[in-house]
Image 1 (tube, rainbow, N blue to C red):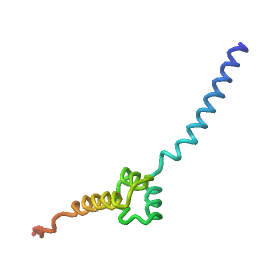
Image 2: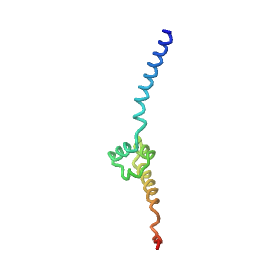
Image 3: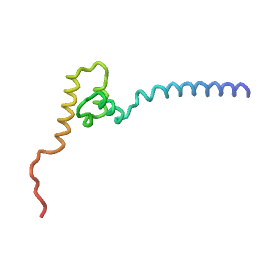
Image 4: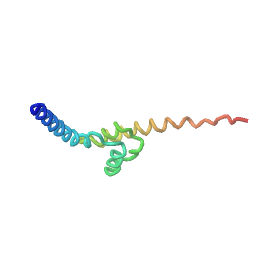
Length: 94
């Protein structure tokens, strides 16, 4: 009986240690879109609000040039503007 209790305590210690390691890693990898948007704002990236989470992560990555950032933002702005329609007058219901 004492042997089983020792093994159980060992497992609990191991699982607590692994949970602590996972807790340290998760905050860095799981940034919300809101946090990424704030970082983009601090870096002075224009039109950061129309970027999706993947684009924000790419824009904020180290080693990316300003030309790549501008191209990515331009694509996102084009995508955003296309959702507003062509501006044709609509028929009103009578």
